[in-house]
Image 1 (cartoon, protein in one colour):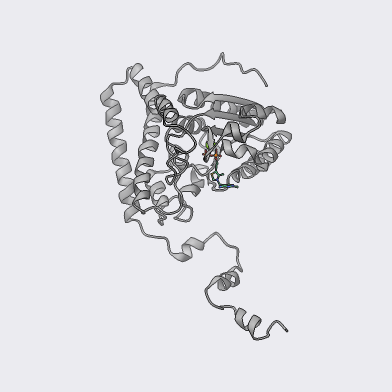
Image 2: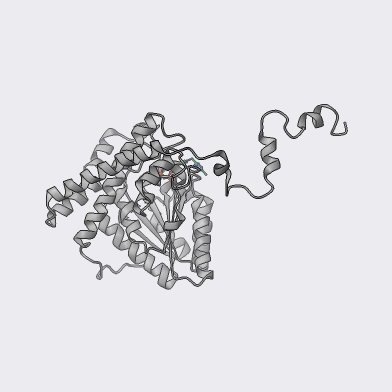
Length: 358
Ligand SMILES: Cc1ncc(C[n+]2csc(CCOP(=O)(O)OP(=O)(O)O)c2C)c(N)n1
Ligand SMILES: [Mg+2]
């Protein structure tokens, strides 16, 4: 493992940047609290995974991206979309499955998407985003572009074949991709220690001869600085890397999980005491930002979140035609025909009236 030179690490983020990033962290927290209420009121279908507690890892990493870099993540993705600048209205409308959602109502909570902002989703299959990120990085190289891909995954994805294949190819082909493992200690209800032969995930990078680094994922500035450095090396020197951000999710795996069967209340309480929002807010106060300014920002965010619910609620449902648009190749009509109830393509005739030649 390369020894990392931290001598040129900036001591502090600019206070205005920090203020803006705290705003995004607060937005994510309040947005997800609202999403949970809407989910429980049955206005959001499918699954809903919250990232409360992980906001510093999310915002720190996304802040390190250049505007033309590409981002791709797993399914716990509300925060990533918001941090990349997707409007709260478009994210909430997507959760509601509405036409003006960021994926036009086709994706829902796990499949947020906004390619205009270089956000390639939200992937519900654990590890599914890894080969895609690797391919995206290869395509950037082929096009001669100096851009990088940031690929987020959970600790539960590092025991998938796709992880090994992606790391291997990224290394042998020198691809500009940083794999960011959000280590929140659990994959659903299984702890990293139980699931992983090498629970120090960042060390696995050594097996592919790429740089691996672990950061305190609840320390916004540490995450941002380290991600910036790794992305720069990816962009300018085509060096792939693994970044492991140590964090914790306060809520259950999904809204349907109380999150108490596999961890103690004491553990959760202990981690809540290190809440990254509280830490970042305290850091703003220490740097002389007046409390009234912080409170005004928080009040503004509350309004933004309420407005996103009103927007999603008033938005229309996508038409069935729009839902299918862009999803199926030309010539899929026959397949759709066969999916209708009954015997739309004459199957009963074929099978029961001897049409198969029996
Ligand atoms: C290929 C695949 N297997 C199983 C699942 C079911 N599943 C959904 S989330 C999850 C755990 C993932 O944990 P982790 O990667 O640590 O992400 P976190 O939930 O902690 O964000 C599993 C097993 C899935 N979605 N895809
Ligand atoms: Mg996890």
